[in-house]
Amino acid sequence: MLILFLAFVVLPVLEVYVIVQVAGGIGWPEAIALVILVSLAGAVLVRMQGFAIWNRFQAQLAEGKMPSNELVDGGLVLVAATLMLTPGFLTDAVGLFLLVPPTRALVRRPVLHRIRRRAENHQAYRVWTGGFGSPTGWGPVVDTDGQPTRRPPGDDPVDGDPAPELDR
Image (cartoon, rainbow, N blue to C red; front, side, top):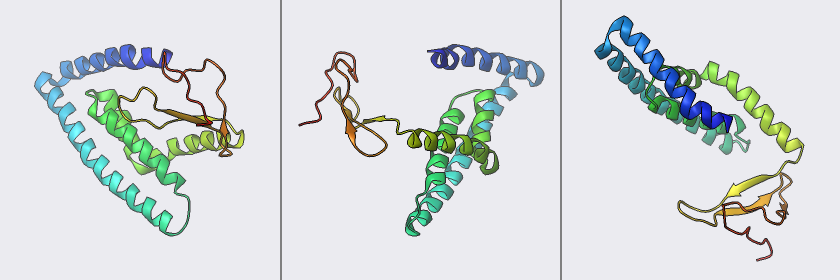
């Protein structure tokens, strides 16, 4: 709940404040042009980094290795692309931070650490198997050892929908 509040209330207020401050210093047309220019530059960088990650991903698979760094990098570039599409200087700055490989590596390390720690603790992950608009798209809970586990009674993945049985 706190993350949603920060993302949808605090961040837009901060973005407007920063844009007003920048516009007060360089003028409104220049500030708007700068936001657009940074977003366009970000789009070019996202495309370049996306292709580079895809090529590394394919090379790792061809060598028979698990491309864990490339998967996390792909996710971080996706987050960066989303941030770059959001108008504002703060989100653009974070997006650019995630697009540059050396700084992205700073974020990748703790993300990989968290994923590995959760896997070592055999924590379960719920997987979405449905498409858009599918009210019963939650698949079985799969423990990290690959074995499905039963949901507790009343654990509805979508409000009002009963949890599907695993015996079917």
